[in-house]
Length: 278
Image (tube, rainbow, N blue to C red; front, side, top):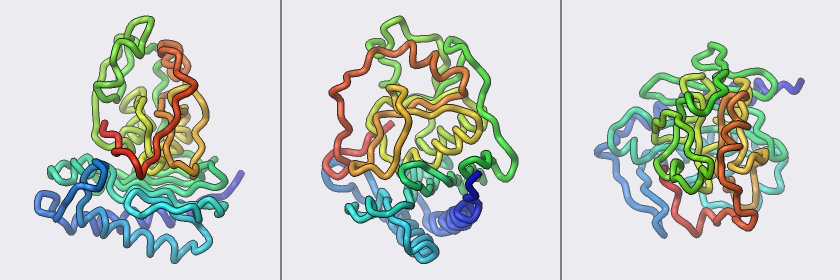
């Protein structure tokens, strides 16, 4: 079994430091502006956390590549066996509003597969963590995904567009829908068993998903794209074809209710299109 505990310890320490940096800014008064081409808001806190993480993590692992929402992308990361995949603040709008549901999402992928991941919500004191082959934890205690198998009784995290009737040709299952702004937090809640699944059918940035996807699978759940295909990371265009994450017993049953997907659909380029808001 691979030992990724040193990388996980590095991410945990960096995530806690990120929390200290982010909470030194007041979300309601932090300087903020809109990114170009409608890509959503950014604050001085996002950039400060990103700068700290890039310095801290790359100093510790200079041979690792770097992919972050707040760093201009380039192809050099594709030449690295390992790459950091980071969202300095997932849920920037929540941060601006003064909510407690934003998170730091930090992951390390090796040859496209995530081997260590952390999702940290400093204002809720929740730190989800996982290492490949080692299990998943919330604040140091082991967590397990839900055993629910019936979509009709499931509690699922999903945005409103996900429940459009045309996506469910056999009729929308009668699950209960809830929402959290941060995709990384949604994945943590599924891994924890608080919710049975999370769904997003829009193109999803790797930095929102990488850490949480590993946490779900290490908690015994299943996490794929919306077609059921395995997730691979550090792609030339760092977007995924949506995400379905759930307990293992529920995953295939959810897929069975969905409309056939268009095989011609391709992810859009993250630097040329707005960030999906869910």
